[in-house]
Image (cartoon, rainbow, N blue to C red; front, side, top):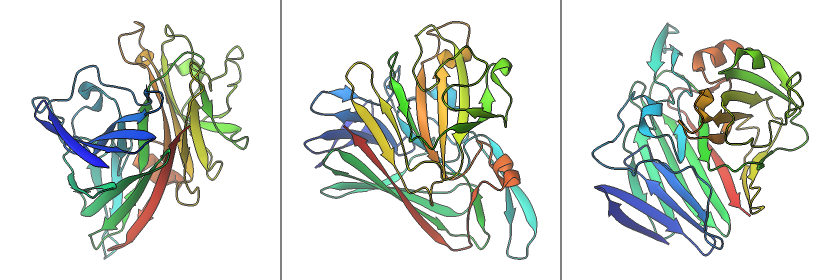
Length: 319
């Protein structure tokens, strides 16, 4: 069932069944703002400090951190601010600059609702493409079907990453299969924890006093780090709450989505615990690292031919 309501001048779409209620905000990047397990009332997504309002909407290229990061965004066609190498039909190379978290999170999306699904779409700004997603529910699982259409006569080089920012509790655990034994460090607020490109054992990063980075630390911890799994290392990732034992599980096809980014954001790495919201994100991704330019250099990116089309999907279960 799909319903809607207005709050602070914005339209919210609510998709729900007997198991899950999810709330979507088309005006702010087609963001999923809430993902709730109805039986327990558990909210899995990080909530904003301030309510969303039409008087304070982000815009293309806005500073992501200044707009109360929360909920579930899609990062595309880059994750971090980056130049994008492109080739036209004559083989000439040019570069386009895409903003931090990509083009899509800060602009309004079009939407269409049916009895059991919500379809959202948006056009690219600095490259001619259409990005769309269809969200539906089946029992305890949220299905998101993605479609990307290249409307240009040039190939599109890109990164896509899901970014569900999660509500966290001390002692809760990040879940992977046992094939994830090494991760690549993308960036960190503390140079002593490693350098970009370092390959480290997961979850016991060597040399750090036996810290299990798959477990959420106490609230006073202050550091931020981003890792990536190796390609094809896993077909799922998940999060288990320490207070209720409930799990959020994300499943995908590793042939289409080869990597998972792991964002650990504990007070933003600041020296003042509580100043910045703490969260983690498990980010199925088509490439690594966050910079599209670096991913292109490493040959760890995705590409769509001129006038081509590509589809992929996620399944997010609350159990």
